[in-house]
Image (tube, rainbow, N blue to C red; front, side, top):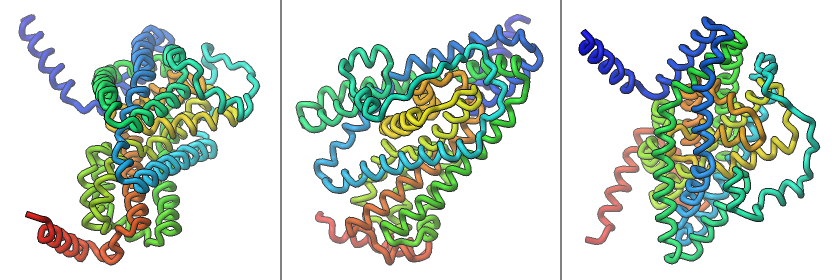
Length: 441
């Protein structure tokens, strides 16, 4: 009988492990809420499970950000060859990311998704009045006098600045920097794998923290989660249909409606897979076959965007950071807002290709401005829903940048761009055949 029971448990465990991680996290959130409501105040006994998960995420932050940023910057090695294109791409991506995080903060400030949440009564959250430092002092403080001390103490902004500077230096010294780049690439891959391992604990950590929250405060915190979803989706829609349309119209003099028709396939793949990297083949296809972008441009700008362009993730961090601050009754200063914008913008360079990157980077932003990391558990349960929207923004931003830069470099076939879908396919086929004929044997 015991063997049969063990076999049944083994099959159940195998079935559970085959469930997608996002669904495991959602199940953990629901079960945590049920357990918390059932156990009441005794649910605090489950909190250490969640605390352990939060601590493992904290463990990742500094090494993951440091290694990922260096790899992200050094992947720009081709910019020495492509010159203007690399400079335009890097500048465009960082500017749009800063605008996205600002939009997210604005939406969060207006909608107030965390207002009225009972977590503000949490006895462990004690806020003391602090004088906001000057802008000059803030700029001075982000440059570390001792990079090793900054790494050891977790001064994230200082770590980011040092990592970006070191990455640029490794690119500039050429072949001499390649051995060090390979070391950081190996370390980054190890951190990605470790992140994947830690994220497997997310369902249990979310269960523990949600049980504690539900036991202490009831189910009154569910409505704010719906408000977070509304706020993120509204912000994403405004960024795509408003800001991107404005960029296409003003800077490239192109019809935004034609653009969105051309990238509809990539947007659908992004929404269903929630993976910018996984959508890259569809993005490349849309750029060349429907938008008329020369492959010399799209083959560089799109992969670079997958690495450093995280407009949707930045917008999401703005909304959720304000949600956590409002939920715990913490008033952010204008310096805190600037810090969130700067941190999310710079950190976006190293977030691509990391499973669970949204939650890890949210933890980074929260810790930078001193917000309670327990708020991550509330977001984790709905993260997959939010991830679908923010990935669409990320992919759309990559294609907007590719199109605008191609237009500025006279590498955009506007007749192809303005053609309907069937005509675009014919033109793309003709261009492919022409390339084959001109290619040397």
